[in-house]
Image (cartoon, rainbow, N blue to C red; front, top):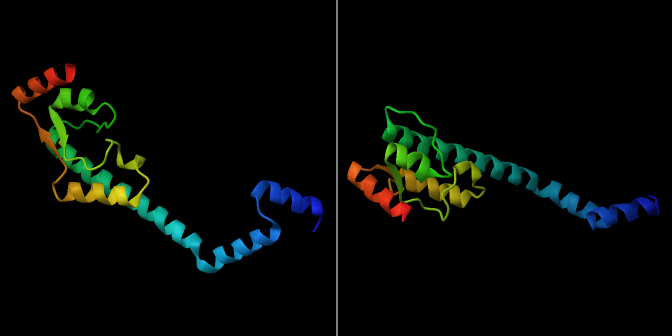
Length: 137
């Protein structure tokens, strides 16, 4: 192999051809490609499960209306219009399941909703008015 090709490869991959060959062989022998594919499939499956479960619970609480569940600006879009809040959200930030990239976060989210720890709550008119006062202050 020409020295130029080996030099180019090293500058791009930061590995010599021999190092790259060893890593490639190890990757192929261990099946790590399949592990990564399976993890990605699991993430997609968990995202779908969470979105479906949360969507069903949202639809049930806002029935007969069928608004789209909005995560960003939830209070201004959903709470003020439909009088619905979220209790028991298990993650630090209120994001849709599709934005999450960890099986641990997605499993936590799914189980808290599935077990009823996280839920949508319909506020009474009085609770909504009190909440509006607090959010504006």
